[in-house]
Image (cartoon, rainbow, N blue to C red; front, side):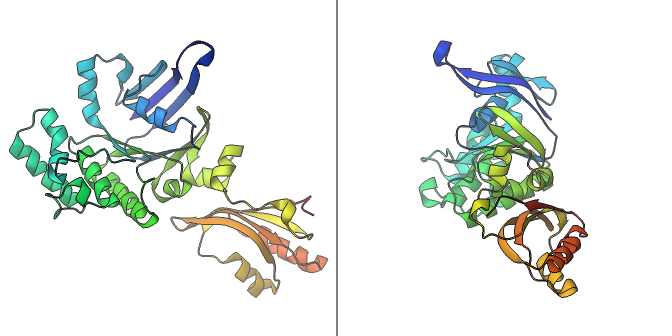
Amino acid sequence: MIQIQHLNKTFGTGPTAVHALEDINLEIEAGEIFGIIGLSGAGKSTLVRCMNLLERPTTGSVLVDGKDLTKLRDKQLRQARQDISMIFQSFNLLMQRTALDNICFPLELIGTKRADAVKRARELLELVGLGNRADAYPAQLSGGQKQRVAIARALATNPKVLLCDEATSALDPTTTLSILALLKELNETLGVTVVVITHQMNVIEEVCHRVAILDHGVVAEEGTVAEIFSQPKTDIGRQLVYPNGVQIDRLPPSRVIRVAFNGGSSYEPLIASLAIDCGVKVNILGADTRNIEGKAFGTMLLGLPKEPEEAAKALRYIQSQPDITVEEVTGHA
């Protein structure tokens, strides 16, 4: 669906030039929700704007459905963009237009008859759960409602791709979850390919199938959400997946192990089972785990009993569990 090949973007020239993106290569499949995450300044927004040529790449190509957008003339590019819609953090609604007329706007631009545009807009308002707010102006809507109108407007031309540039960053946690649920539903029901740009890992884990981590303009790592969450391979990956990781040098002096959960059932209580099955109690010194579609990912630091036999019994039990890896932490005293 979307193929980004050797894409580079440089702002300015000479010694003051800023290399925002360097040799980006990504392939996003039709019908998936693909996440692009990174810290501020990583190049995320520049990359998503290159996907529809709001920013023209310095070099490289962007193919959507086999068409290289960088080689299209202006008229051809405008037509191709009808298949690629975008929603923004700041909603970008026209304040003098009602919710209905905001959604009609892109249809007006392509010459759709007013009656047909109004019919389509009303259908989309129902789809995003705002059927009763057609005549409301943006100033009369909450942040979540504004984003729903923006999503409806983005869907007006029946796009194949929906680009979401920090679409939930301005929303509270509850509203964020409702917008993410809506995006997931639209992906499933309409088959639209969704690209999510975010700096929030909880957004990635909530809706995305695959994810690429961007760091200083380069792709640091890429994979399924399960792969990245279970075994991040880079420093930036570990920083994003475990932002509140335990400082080992602050732990009390004892024998400590790190347990990594690699996608087993999140409904199997490891510590409780250890106590019940073996009669051994361990101390939880720190944990950063999460439940993704009923599977457990993340890590936990455990302090083993001081008695060698009890510690060995606990270690053998934990090592025997499926989808779990264990390593001993040294130098923590």
